[in-house]
Amino acid sequence: MLFSKSYCGSSPQRFQRLPHARGAFTLVELLVVIAIIGTLIALLLPAVQQAREAARRMQCTNNLKQLGLAMHNFHDTYGKLPPMSHEDWGNDDTQANWGWAVLVMPQMELNSTVEALNPTSGVVTSDYWPRKATGNTLHAAAADPALKPILQTPISAFICPSTSGPELNDSKPIPYDSGNGDTFLARSDYVVVNDKDKIYRGSSTNRPDGCFVWTRMNPPVRFADITDGLTNTLLIGERCYELGGELIGSGVVFGHAGNDDGDQPTGAEVGYFYVAGSGYYPINSTVSDANNSHRQGFASNHSGGVNFVLVDGSVHFIPDTIDHNPDGSNFGAANSTFERLIQKDDGQVLNSF
Image (cartoon, rainbow, N blue to C red):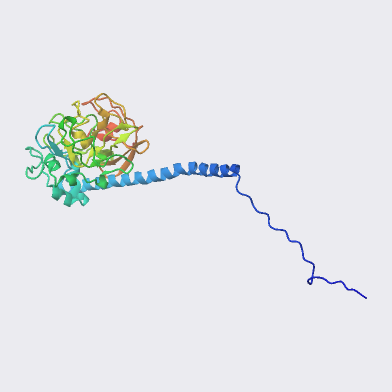
């Protein structure tokens, strides 16, 4: 019998290999990936921080431009710059004085705020400024439950986004009450430029040499009085709340307590320094005498300097390395670049700075 071969299927089955299964990451590989990610973050973080600070600094510049524009609109309306503050007569511990910011608020679309506060324009008779004794003094407004919330509402136009600090300036109470006051108003990171040395009450022979004066003793400043040129004179500068762990104190939007000036031991804590600054100490100074006089100056949390708006409305970043000789010569001529920028009529015109 013949036998034939038979096959199962039409062709021999081929042997197929299963794909090789990939194991999990080893610990070494995982650590390498984490190290790479950490390195990338370390490289990118400074760039992100720099971009954020650039945006904050730009917003600060815009704030100052708006304040400079408000000053120009005020001058166009009244033919003069606003005063540093109006005086409401009384005890340094119990009185308070409306500041320059309140006067320019109508030029900043904040009319409703001013109308609600109904501020006086100084209760002391002045030979230079119109007097409006009716209305509310600042210390009365701060004690009024209906008006106090307005005074404690932060206003973004007066806040530098690079400055970290409380919305209410807890370093400058109103009224002062010998440093024990517990009413705090909205913080301002911008103060007007008053004097190359200390801020004085002023008189006919002893007056601030910047653009801002005190109403009882000083005549108003007009653009025509700024004989050094609007492009060569500082108008408003920054003061941050804290720098390098040192309290600098910023300012207060609505005004100041008392009338203490730079000659008084409490001058940096009460009085004009709530709303104005001087060149008595260098920019960004964190060290000074026992009276903390550096707190009357200018400082910022922008690295290396401070933004200022000049009288012409332009904003300049002035480095803290600028030529400055803070020799405390209260009546002497300016002998450094920063002092010349502060003085409005010293005759020492700058070609560049």
